[in-house]
Length: 293
Ligand code: ADP
Ligand code: MG
Image (cartoon, rainbow, N blue to C red; front, side, top):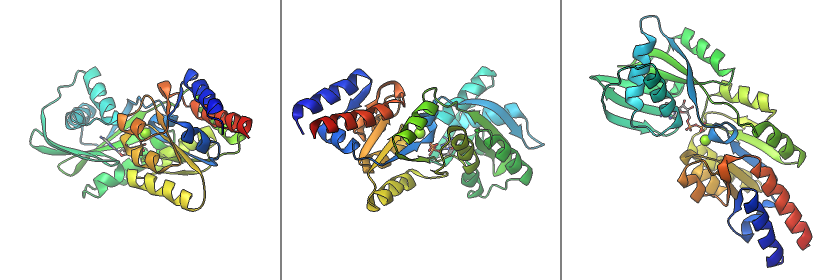
């Protein structure tokens, strides 16, 4: 490998918004046969917004949203921001919260006006002994099968209802997925989101391999398992929850729009979170390495 051609390759990448850390990363990228992608913030824009609120009979939509927003005030999760913004847009009064606790990849709890409020995914509430009516689960699955993320809300262990959140697919994603397939790469989507939501996004993009409901540790372990099977793995992600998996991959690819922890764990950073940079990095590594040989 001539240092000169590698320098040129890294320079070309930088010009196109693909920041490659060093020569080693470019060399390894050429050998990659499997690309793992996170859903939220990587395939999707990661700027979710509330599109629907569904309540159980006894509760009001405004009350549900105001309580959820109060409890989410201290969370930095993009879903929390969507909920707080939606409450703000409706001019709802948002009370002070205390005793905030967050479970990564699950949800949050906080005390609001003497009530214990839980906001999170189905299993997070179910595991905290909140009974979830069948009718709500069915409605949630319906919303999820159109690609919505559904967040459950409870007060004092009573389910108030769910919030449906939309996060559009990035403009560059469909074309990027097609090109990655064309390059002969195996593609797997990983997400902490629900099975039905993941299925809808995978269908829309033509991704046939995915895993839903995975924790940050699961993402990391999945990368490690593939490597133990002899695969050369690139992992693309944007969040704190992706950082362990990015660090475990042969090549970690972070969205420049993502968390600092993700960027620090990665060998490649895509400026502006432009996913087409994954294709550029793959083609660039192949072009560079074939010049060298
Ligand atoms: P992803 O892998 O899609 O980036 P996460 O691992 O961050 O997702 O979260 C997985 C799921 O956990 C979310 O889809 C949501 O249902 C729930 N969740 C996580 N954090 C929060 C939060 N602050 N508020 C509500 N729900 C949350
Ligand atoms: Mg993400």
